[in-house]
Length: 348
Image (cartoon, rainbow, N blue to C red; front, top):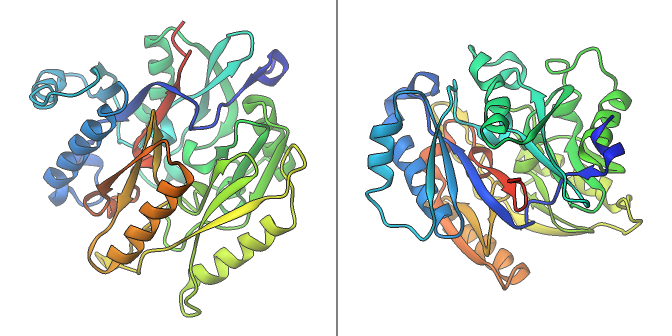
């Protein structure tokens, strides 16, 4: 029986959380291991920021529990920080963690996608592919294996039947070369309980995930999509965002609503280590009563304030909690990439 046939669906990220999951970074897997101390400090700050709003489970490699627990529990937090010993190669739990689906009758299950390190870009990934099953086993949540290579950062749902993704990522032959667009869409519908998939074309320029949607667009609410935009004709993101905007202008969601687009101006371009950094305000993360928002400072100070203002206006009942996004961005991701929500009700 497929999850959708049993009434399961994926809640929107703003659905109340039981806890957040974060994986502790692994120096050996870092693109720039010389930055490992600042990366670890960033993860500590992220964990503490989330714990201002809700409990956090930190995934650590076996043998690391005592040192990391001592580091974290040195700080007093509003909520519990739990340490889980689960072997992993890398720390992007949005992409290798489980996707929790829930049923109206109270049933809970976890989707276990296959993970191949963004199309085989980083070896090894065997431990990362086993992270989701280990988490589900720890929390005694039913595991549902999906016949699809996919990362959590490549999808967003409105919790009301509509899924947002990009063709550049999900249709890339380095994931599921034997599956057609129709095949992939069918799996998304069956496993996530949605009835409509909106396919944007591309993600942001320089995104090594092949265009995860969580950098360029996300649902703000059913019928509303936040999109990071660019107006500089010399910047390749301008053509990318215009193409995606054109798609949203001519489509409706699963309930027949036209899509209202809420634009957020991208921060000024920055390069490091000879590569463009994928700076995105849409790589924020909903927490209970708040939003953890990456900001970039310096030349981005003006757009930082614009992003804070837009999200504060959209969500007056949430605290917008900025966090410096620069220490982690050269590793290839940011706040949303390093977190995974466990919806309230997910613990049986």
